[in-house]
Length: 71
Image (cartoon, rainbow, N blue to C red; front, side, top):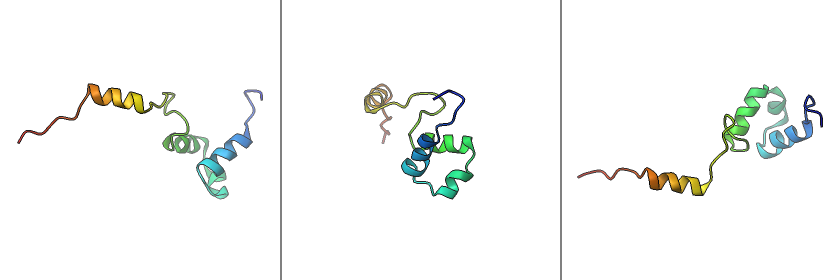
């Protein structure tokens, strides 16, 4: 599909299927609202940054452990 064409089938599958939006809500959304909904649902990367998985989370948890409160 040429880059200047909108792939409505994909967008509808994401909005109506993955996000489970009612059709009237899907069609009323602006493109940026739709993007934010997809980002919030974890279906696309936020701000162009790839989402990290369990391994990265565990690495970060090892590097930055929670402080143990002193009693």
